[in-house]
Length: 163
Image 1: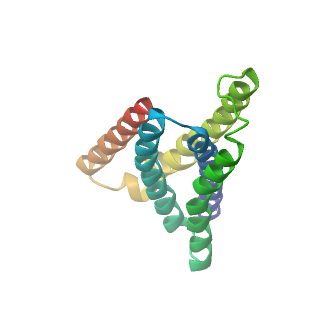
Image 2: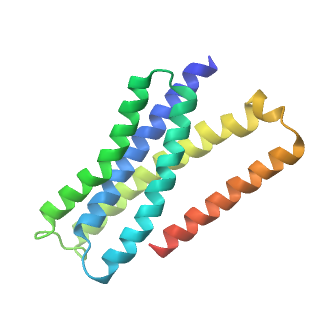
């Protein structure tokens, strides 16, 4: 059933975003100096677009207002929770220690992998290759949507490089 599949994809996407948001919140919490302002600015844009993505996905697949509120609330609190953890461990955290680099690298890889899988396999594949509603649109409109997708991906990559 495609409705159940979309719900599962949304929940997997939400789990990946939550995990990712805690990690970037943690990263922001331990960052000091001039890097903090740059990272904060990049994360504001990044989190905004992530919020739009998860909200759009949830809105199209979850019918219950309670579930929508729960998904939005979970997204809204995760980065601040990560920041609190980061601030709490800031005094004992050494960003150049081998252990910190390994832990951060592994957590970033897991979060990134979940987001890539969900975005490419679950969301993009369904919405742009097998979705009858999308395929029935005029070719020019589909082309504009593909261009928008690539522009959005490019902007997110630019924001990621800036951070």
